[in-house]
Image 1: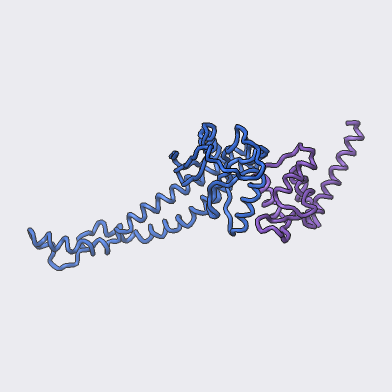
Image 2 (image 1 turned 30 degrees about the vertical axis):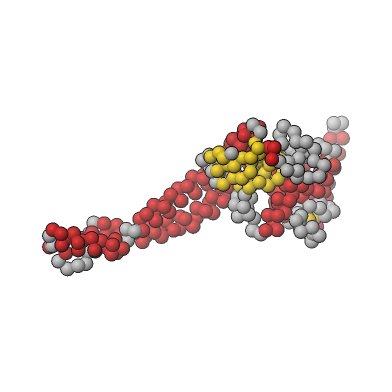
Length: 103
Length: 224
């Protein structure tokens, strides 16, 4: 699976994909991202909706059946997972370089 | 209270214009092309249980640009914004500009948290106007093609009056015959298409100007 064209991920995308490893609707993702980033990253509603549309187009997330008619549920796809782990690997390497130079 | 304004393309300016009234104690109730209807904030009904008292930025209005193919998509969109503290005020499913008011003090003051997603609104607007423009442009060229014969008719108006000997008549009998023939002559000349073409060109120009302006704004705001 070629994940290179998706890399590097923006911070927002990284958080959204991570938050959607378990299924959730739009507002759930907004809350989860805030939680994961310790309140540092707050995605506004309009930005969130655009991001979801974008990730759906790129097949990084997919809709899953929702019990709530008014709220769609999304989940990170297999491709999304691969992209996430490639990104994590890339970041780990960057951090190891930073460590080596004593930053 | 009703306020009128020439339709905006620059959504940021539209938000500023609307929010001036919001800060003066009004709430936006509905938007209809160029008619903005405001109601006093006091008529506010409680939207959620245990609602905290509104702060100074309550009912602030922000615009998004989206259109939807299906009702569930539209419903999902509005529900997500409502969950985040933004109530949908105005805008139809097939429309493009959607108006929201800030009903929760926990909601952010902006609908967008970065400049890229904020400027993408203008890209969607530009796409919308281009989609409107294409069929109008097709109609425009088709009618110009049809009109070519009518242009020729303009210089041969006499030939469109078919009554034999019409032009030899004089006085009242000439005018009576002339007026009786005029409607059919008009019909044959194809000149009746002219008002339609004028209307069509008006649409073409409006769509083209709006598309160009939204794209220009997109490029400008993306860099800001």
